[in-house]
Structures are given as C-alpha cells and as structure tokens.
Image (tube, rainbow, N blue to C red):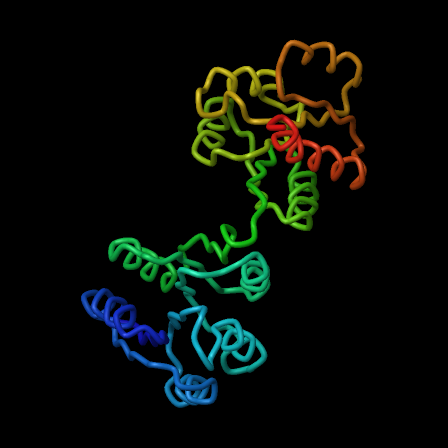
Length: 264
C-alpha cells in the first residue's frame, strides 16, 4: 500500500482518481488546491510516495508545483504523474526536464491509471514525461554501436524529437520493434554484424505500416556505391560516416519539411 496525494481543482477528476486508487488499496488524500503554499505544506507535512497533479489550476499552476518540488531537497525525488487535458510544447519541454515525471492526457481510463500507478511505484514504468505535448516526431535509431546510438539520440532530442534506441539483435526482432514503435523517421546503420541496413530496409518496405516511413541510411561504406543500391527505393537518403551534427540536422529537418512541401 502506498501513500498517494491527488491535487486537482476539478472535484470530479479528484473523485475519479481517488476511487481508482482506493480500489487498489492505496492510502489516498484528495486536495483541492487553493494556493501553492497549501499544496507545499501538505507535501511537507505528509510526504506521499506518489503525487498525481493536474497541470492547469487557478492560483496553483502544476508546473510551478513541480519546480518547487525539484528545488526542495525533501521532494526532489518525488514521483509525479501529471494528468491534464490542456498543455503546449513549452509545458512538454518543462516536464521532460523535471525527471521522475510521467504524463497522462485526460480523459484517463481507470485500467490505464491503475497500471501506470502500479508500475511507477514498482519502478517498472517506462516514463513518458510529455512527448505528445512537445515532440515533433518519433525517431528510431538502429545501430549496432551503443555509442553511435547514444550520439544520434542526443542530437535528435536537442532537435525536439523523441529518440528511441533499437539494438539490432536479429532481423525479425528489429523489424518487429520498429513496427511496434511506428516511428516518423528511422536512422539506420548499414554495416551491422548479423545483417545489413539494406536487408532491414527491404523488410520494412514489405511491412504495410512502415511502407512509407522515411529512412536515413548511415554508413561508413562507400557512399556512391550505397546510393546506387538505394536508388530504386523511395524515401531513403544516404549519409556517410562520420556524420557531422550539422549534416545530420539538415537531413532530418529536410525529411520533416518534405511532407509540407508535397502538400503545396
């Protein structure tokens, strides 16, 4: 049983969350926030294991509560679930910088909230701090080099994309991981131990959900040779290693500009 504090100015939302959590035998406190001081006082007097927080509240903005928590040595590691039907890219970027924050858009189904809470409390939840508020798109990075995956993911996150590492253990598993992720762009290495990027690419083009997913093929192989090999395939561009941050940025930005131009 965990101690959970629910802070929401909407009484219906508070009662909904409280009912869901009490059904899981948690100790739940419901708080209608009058001001920031009231919420912080409650957090200090009776620190919870988990805070469920609305984002938009008159006189007590959820982002302000979060900032105070992260600056407070007693609350900086507090687990927080933000639930809201409102938000923007700025809010999304702030949430992503907070740490130990998970975002759920309202309305939230009771089973979804229950699973989320249990996994968060057990440290098995894959945190989503608000990508759908701020994210420009999902980029899958497929490379057998952990360092290259990390470098490319860091570049993508700085550009505002959600970057997901996909370790290419086997061809079928890689294709399945990409099909489940359904990314907006794939950064794909060409030379990998068990198979090459061309095999992955042809497997993707045989998968309906990935048929039109743009691919940036990254290789240390001879660029012209690979470009000729890829010539008959749509939505594929070749980048030759070592890839500079500038070249990678320009190639990625071109992919996301292209659909808008195609619609003109």
